[in-house]
Length: 235
Image 1 (tube, rainbow, N blue to C red):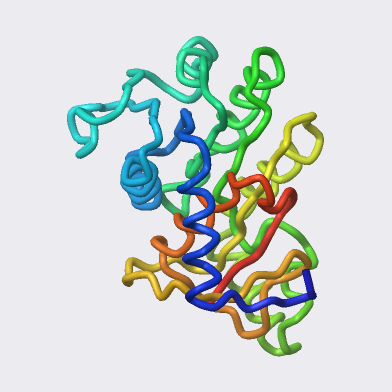
Image 2 (cartoon, helix red, strand yellow; image 1 turned 135 degrees about the vertical axis):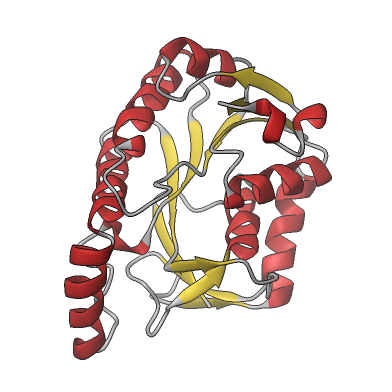
């Protein structure tokens, strides 16, 4: 892949169709009741896959009658093991729900990784953030790099970014076959089905992307030729 590769609508749709047309998979999903998690569930079900989701409150999950539900916490090793049992791959859209220090990823990702390393499966695709790595802004202009790093990452998003850094470190030191998808700001707009992908840094002037496009991209990475490493994407 070139440093920054734009994926056109046909290419994105084709990648999604490849993921959808491969053998039907059993997914374990963490963070299913978040905004991106619901989109992942919706798309996985539409493609004919089987989803097992770990939910703290199944009663508020709109797809609860169409999936296998494990009631519990991602911090509980037994609940995590029950969720991934028999799965072909794991998807996670876990993350902070506020700007406060929550340590969700610091606590949950080690439990998920340890369970997967012990009993499988080996493949995991997680939702990350463009602020997870120190070279994520290398393709931005100096003034934009300073603003984003000093004001956004170091101040406003200090704790969510710290959690994403921890997630990267945990995955990169694991023995799993992992992909961390690292977008900039997420929005709730409809998917454009076209965006830029880069495995080295956030694409120049990349500022946002829809959750729908990210969900499609995450599912597409479960195809045999999916990216195995951290990957940035933005409109």
